[in-house]
Length: 210
Image 1 (cartoon, helix red, strand yellow):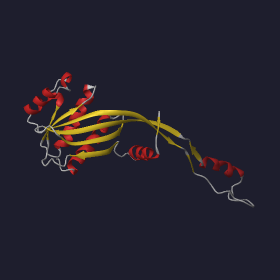
Image 2 (cartoon, helix red, strand yellow):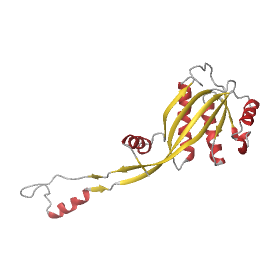
Image 3 (cartoon, rainbow, N blue to C red):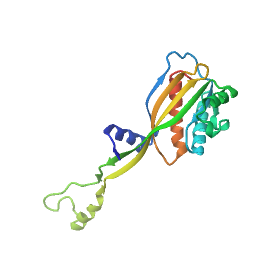
């Protein structure tokens, strides 16, 4: 079990308590020698589960299509036992008129623990002398105990995935762009993948690649 650092705790608080995106980008790079823009992307998500792969590739396709980019999900034309065969992938890209390939794979997995120390809500100021603050007598004093509540400390574990995405040019076979991201595993897979795809698409646009 890996204990969270202060920075990670703050990140997870923003991601989950405030319902922000569940994905953060650790860093990205783009090839300064690449002068073009991609127009037709072959999307390949490396995943053991075929359903997860399809959800991932289709979600990326929708996000890139919203920016005017044509996309092809690999599962339509690439047999699962050929996902590492470069020649087969290249033929599929050419057959679909693609100019680039976006590949994404899982590179790490860890569990982070975030602890909330607990807190007290409510409270009152005591009265002194005579009838004091509680003019209604001891019954009023007794009832005031229900105005105070203690929220106990809680410990929550989060599974964090480290994911790498890379973009290659078909003609030169050179890397155009790469990024490393961390995403918190959610029960809602569609939402998690959507967050991831939006961040990648935004970075590609900011770097002038789409």
